[in-house]
Length: 151
Image 1 (tube, helix red, strand yellow):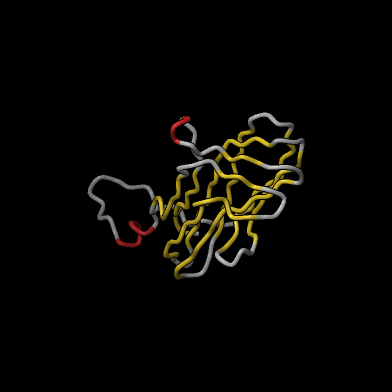
Image 2 (cartoon, one colour):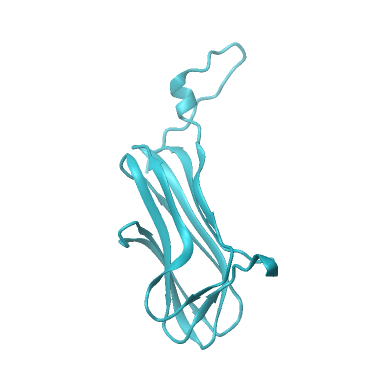
């Protein structure tokens, strides 16, 4: 995918609006956990992991979800990034044998202009998955959408 990088700048050059628009716009929205989440064998939203932002056409975005989790039985675990209607746009599978598992899911995308919602969903094949987010235990999970610049 071609991108539109900014130009080199030199002393005395005038900064234009077009050049300003080529800079990344940073965080568009984020969510951070405040409690552990419990996920079973039915795909479900990960509590609080939803971001709504106003997208601009022809821009590149990055959605990132990070967590630590464990399961109470050996299982295959799936994490999904979906749109607001639960249509999957990206996913990751991990096998787990009860231990603490770090997990990162990163989705790079473009979209049409307007209000957009993305969220995180998960499921496990057997038993229960606990996603650790209790701030009292110095753990958290988070979901962030960032603008990377023009596509």
